[in-house]
Length: 88
Image (cartoon, rainbow, N blue to C red; front, side, top):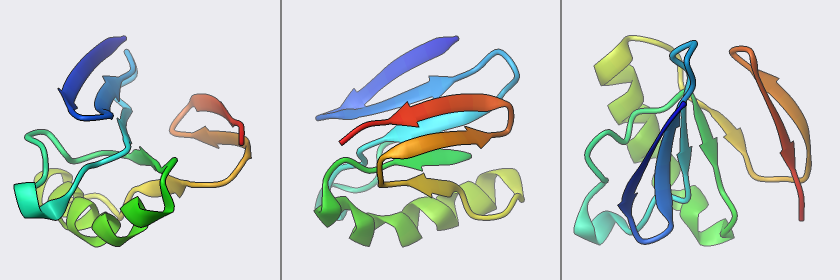
């Protein structure tokens, strides 16, 4: 597992199976962080939902894959062999 801090409360987490998680992307005024492409995007702040289209575009351009899965509510998730539990 590789964890990189991209600024503010944004982290990029890569699993050994090459799944990428991006947490809490920050303001578009400052631009998206380098390496913003992700398979899974976690959102703990509802204001961040407005930034998801830019993250999805960066993801598609970089990887050629579909838009990332967004985790913004409590629950259990499994995406690309990554198990997650989101809490309120």
